[in-house]
Image (cartoon, rainbow, N blue to C red):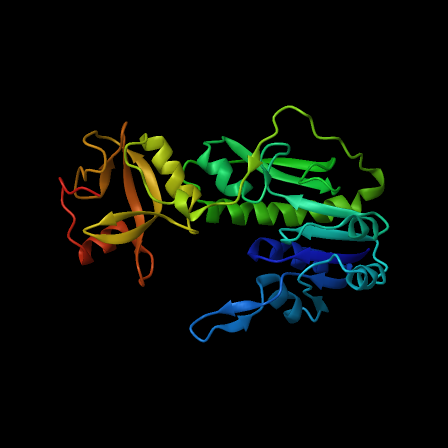
Length: 301
């Protein structure tokens, strides 16, 4: 098929690579514009942009797709279908209608649960037992279109957003190739009206740990916000990101260190901190962190 690919972050890269490997003709890659990054604040291409350049594919990164000129350029690509995955812009109706078979979206949840911007984070933070990927026929609403394919994936007890992100991205890449191969025979099933939830964008204000919450909630917060923006607390007056945790035995005043392996009391139960990151430093396992920072039982975080 002749495909327009629309994606921006790391999550979209395996999908683009899978489409190329499957022999599809990528007419153009659309992504968000490069943005300043690093100490020099030089423009850095997005992950999908960088991947497209390596693959020798044409790239466009309009700031919006609302102008008649942008829409005419899109339609002139004469695509069979557009594949959209974490692109970052709402698509106008003229864009949705331009490809012969419309636009297919790869969404990292079991729709209609977790429509919206942060489905992976929200699934972990809510304590969901499973999530998955849906291949959806796009329409004007936010993730409201009928679903062509869906597949569930178990959320493991130690999953961070980073780990689950990578598994879902690989699953989405496999599923979109299957969907395109089977497109003439697939039936788009409308999403049920019951069970709709919205995965609102993660706010950095959600990241500070409240140790009075239950251990299960704190553990899910840490794993769900890892690696970005990173749940955090203060240790010895310094702000430290908490990147991995597990439920632990013990109880005490919330925020109190219970042992010499960084188990911390919560409002109910305790969590053990497994991976941490001080400002300006790399991530460290708890044992390595403790070699550079004295934290003893009875300390309050």
